[in-house]
Image 1: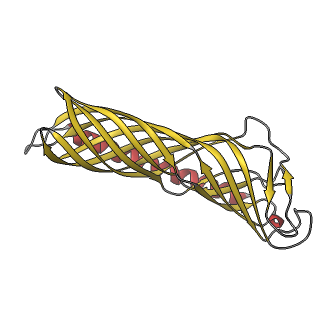
Image 2 (image 1 turned 120 degrees about the vertical axis):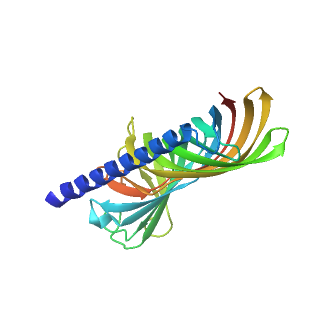
Image 3 (image 1 turned 45 degrees about the vertical axis):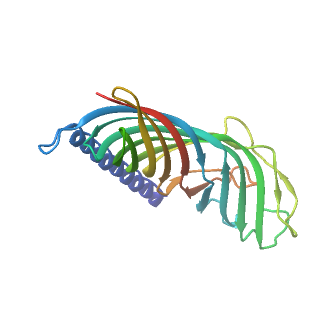
Length: 277
């Protein structure tokens, strides 16, 4: 028991130190960007974007299992289409830009497939094998992000710009009211059949985890008024791996909670405005 608390303390301390270092890095980037260099003065700007996001399937694997007789689990979560919004303040040095960005994206859970190796005494027989189960889900996952971004702009003429971008930062990933809906259908063989979930009550599973994140993208911007550009971009966003405590329940034992390692990644198409000041 002592080692569990010690491990939890170390993990919490490490995550806190990582987030502090990332926030300090982003703050330094923003301060540096807002300052004019001796070689070239910067044009400051603010921007806002909104658009559609397609979150890729989440693969999750167990870190521990409270009942060792239930086997080793992995899961694949199918997520629906969602939306992304961002806001940023930055500096334009001509061919390159630096900015600090706050963003938010959310996507719904649609369904999941669980895979269990080494199934034993938790199921209707004592057979040892692999069990797969698919079932619908509800709830959503969101990411609140703080990113430092860099851009390289190519002038196409008439103040139209083509650009590429990359950024790093931190993300708070949140799971809201995540739950399975009804029953799941097992794979073939002696363990096949339909199983009813033992615990499927609202509000469902909720959790918040902080992790590092990065993004890359490309876009095109064109002026529509003095100091205002219409900006269309593509973005790929991803987090590093993180652990979610008690993510889901092993069935049919409703109190058999598990923790899982996973990550988020998404594709987004965003439209917005960039205003110089």
